[in-house]
Length: 159
Image (tube, rainbow, N blue to C red; front, side):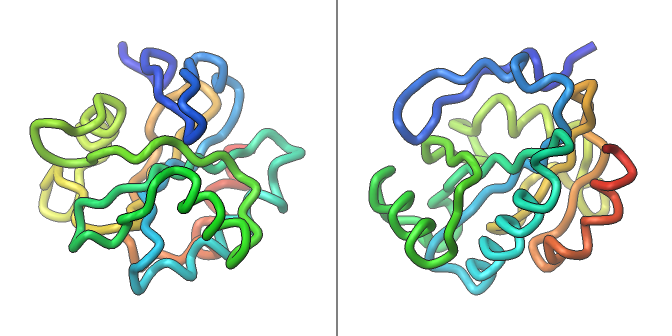
């Protein structure tokens, strides 16, 4: 059975991150963008991270430029934008694709585990969120318009 532990991703600093090191942590995996109508969700994501990080919770942000080019920056520009505008301290990863032939294997797996509306696998927009339990299994997918605050009760149930 596949879990998040079967994947390695790259941080925004170019370092490999073996996600088996995240087993035992509840994760919220989010594809992000700096120039999107949902960009203010960075604030809510950071609030969740601060509220629950000491209990074994982490947000992993994956910048993605696939939706109307709304994440055009490089890793340093994205990190600076997030820190200056939203005080983001949760980990940001390297920019990835979430759909198509070059999609991240992690995202291909999460999409299969938690299909979207009408069973569609594609991520439909920025700030789609996947909740991962301590065993590394996908618990639920949330739509871009699901606010971080609305996910808090589901996070608490897993902590």
